[in-house]
Length: 493
Image (cartoon, rainbow, N blue to C red):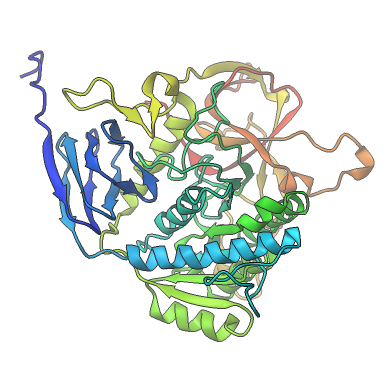
């Protein structure tokens, strides 16, 4: 009955044996708190502190693993929870150790010192390239989980590593909004609490720096969830990310030795995209980030394909898929997009279950995660809004035989908000960095190569007055700025 206070939930205690994991799934509006009572436990490589409640929400699906055994208390009522002792963690740990040896050899080579082998002598015949890893796999394989785990283990090694984690899955968005591709050096373990920010919290939307993840990613805007929508644009953005990472490595030997981990969408493995598009984008990643190892998660056919194509040039390793991976549907992905955009504007706030008053999100105080976005009315002429190619552009292989596009896939097209069919109402806009101040250095497609500095939502359009209302996480002027629209929309509810 409404209005009646709900009794505090009784925590449920779980005793986990060594090398087992507690898996849980949440429904909408559910949240749980997990507290490590004793022992050691981690969530995708993020180690939990003993006696501290950690909150999870927004349909989070995760697993708490222990190497040595532990006792945990779970407050709340997950839709599904159980314990399993069948995990791929030994294989993942072995893989981490192999990558760690590559890092050590690379750093020793950069410093001109001999690299020790496992017996304490100089490593003979071993390569000195740092790990530059491309992770491939089908849908529901756990690719992002593996990338996050490898990055977390690297930062926990105590060697000052800062691996560069790249996300080229636009349906996920990484540290930014859905539709973006991004990269950031990971300076500390990435927490998991919500699918709204799968790679941790960046410091791009708030005037606070979160100690759990003070990440400042480099972001480019693709604008769509599917890579088949505009593979030429995706190819270009991947190469832009790679060029920036390699430029950074020229000045940062420690970062270069830490290596690169590239998370990819499932369409790189299989799906409706043509094989030519898949191969084009895989090759773009390999070239852009100078990949020397491909990890294929739980897909025999793809492993054989990559082995045949690239096995003579680099290492191709098949890694097992976790039995805890959850298959999700289209409706779930749509809800996660909404969670991510709401979090970008308002911050990440998880309502604790009854009885929990001091829970934390990824180790952060909940009060530090609340944002107050700004709603601003601007003139149509204040902000230059573009789309890349046609907004109804079909994939190239879907065009009739002999048909030719009237608009190039790479052509920035100026959008007129005064037109009734502009499609800007509720559109997600990527606000771009300013163009090159030297007009002699500008070029027609410069918009494609400008990084994103923030995201905006068009919440209202007044055509008679030629004004529109923009929602942004921080207050600022948009006069003379450039933004790009894609196919993502969001309504504040």
